[in-house]
Image 1 (cartoon, rainbow, N blue to C red):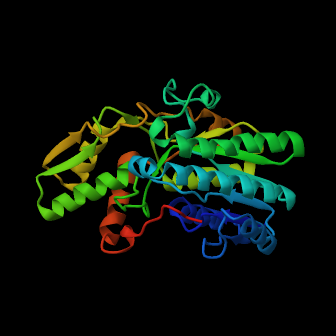
Image 2: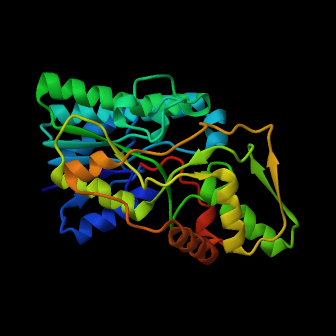
Length: 317
C-alpha cells in the first residue's frame, strides 16, 4: 500500500523508514517541512493530493526535554495539536484507509499507578512541565476514537515511552535526558572536568525504549492492529535518574562528581508502562538490552559529535 510518513527526517522517523523498507514497504513518501508545512491546512491538503496515501504514519512533532517544554509551552501545544487535527481531518476527507497516530508518555496523569496501564490515561492531569505537549498529543486519541465512531475511520493510537538510540538529538537546548547526560559526560571526560551537573534530585524514575524497537512496534501496529484502544510501547524497565547517570558515567569513563541541582524540576515522579496490550494485540515486545542500547547510542555520538549531533531536530516534519 502507498504510505505517507510524516516526520520521516526525524530521530524516530528515520528508523521507521528503515523498518518499513525491511518489511517490504516500497511505496513510501516521507516529505520534509520544506515541502509541506503541516501546521497549514492548505499544505496538508496539497501533501495528500500529491502523495495519495492509502495509510499514514504520523510522527511529525515539535519535541524537547523539560527545559524546552518550559520555554516553549504555547508553541509545543499549538503546533502539535494543529498538525494532528488537520492531518487526520484531511486524511478522512481524502479516503485514507488507515491512520497511525503517535502519542506520548507525557499524556499520562502526573500521579499514575505503576506500571501505567492504558485505562489510566484519563485519571488526572499530566505533569505540569510538559502538560501542554502531552495534552496536544492526547487529543489525537480523542479525534481518532470520535472519527472511528462517526465516520468508521480506521485510526489507531500508540503511546511510546521515552526513546533513545543512535541518531538522537544531542543539542543541549532541546535534548532529552539520555542524550543530554551522554553529551555532558563525554565532554567532561574530553575536557578533564571533575564534575557534571544533573537536573533535579535524581530520585525520579524513567523507562526508556530503544528507538529501533519502537520503530518495529509502530510497523507491527500498522500491519496488524485495527482497534480503537490506545496501546503502550515500552520496555517495561524502570530506572532512577541517579542510577541512569551513574551508568552513563561508568560507560563513558567519567569518574568525577555528579552534582544534582535540586532547584531544577524532576518532572513526573515515576514512569513505567504496562506493555502487555501490545504483545496481546499485535505480537510486539521490546528486545534491546538497555546497557547495549546505551553503548550503541554513545558510540554513535562519539562518531558524530563534531558535526551532525549538534543539529537541532525539534521540529521534524
